Image (cartoon, rainbow, N blue to C red; front, side, top):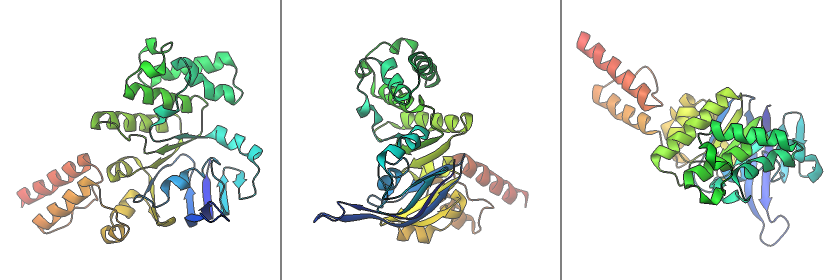
Length: 289
């Protein structure tokens, strides 16, 4: 389902002495089936924005449209449950949200809360345990007896179990080692393709944004300031710098290599693999002269 934000603003503590503006005039469109990364420095409004995507927060101004449903400041709470059935959010450190006595019960909680019967919820739970690479014997264990990486996978399974069509990821690899981070990001990429999800990744990692996203939205001081494909966004080094954002490592290395050889490569290398191919081709061309 398509998602659009039209002049969305948000005030924490509205009409109180502690009122603070977090969002102002945010415009964005996220197309069904796309993979969108939201990037920005700390305090840019990324996390506040994502909480508008399933009604955890309602806009103080403007309109959020999710499929055929509209959220405004006046939307009643009872109208938000259906939206939340379609939009799943994996927060930072999702394992902190585990609470049931067994893994399978924790995974079953979400779908049963949305009206799925117990047998179907259990079937989904066991299916996800396998899909997420967890040992079968974890099902009846306490989630708190698992390793940190396993706990995170259980928490992710709990979100996937009610079959959302939109998956929102808020720094989902926070606290993981490089290997764990890569495994989780690859898992989300596989799920995105296999389940035809609309995936929205909030991240500080320019590398992850460049590698996985189809489109990038840049946030700065509570508003949307840039959007486009990774190639379009990461081609504008100077503009990104004004928003205190850098480039993916591969693009930084590419710029240095281009200075060394005195010409530009034909592509913007958004990953190490693409960079290696481009450099090999450039070196081959030099050798053929």
